[in-house]
Length: 87
Image 1 (spheres, rainbow, N blue to C red):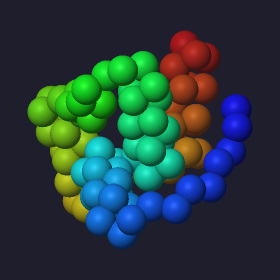
Image 2 (cartoon, rainbow, N blue to C red):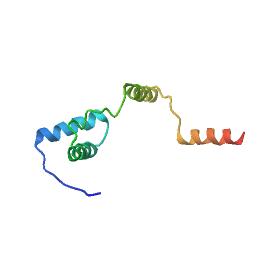
Image 3 (cartoon, one colour):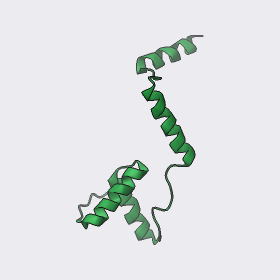
Image 4 (cartoon, helix red, strand yellow):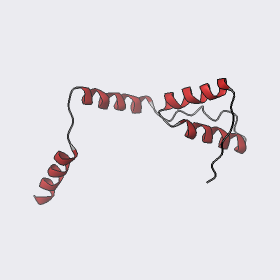
């Protein structure tokens, strides 16, 4: 893998940042996908959605559970696994 530093116009950098935020991925990933798609000759590299509606609903449900305090610590999960394995 090669690391590159490039200068972008402000509007292009802003569009990349907005796309990354909307897709919940790092801006570097979006930039790499766009460049790779361009090199492969693809016309619309970001048309595919990384998250389905079902994915987004499941993520929101998990966030809601966290807000309600419906969480387990790592220690609680490991203790539960060990108890089940001991049966």
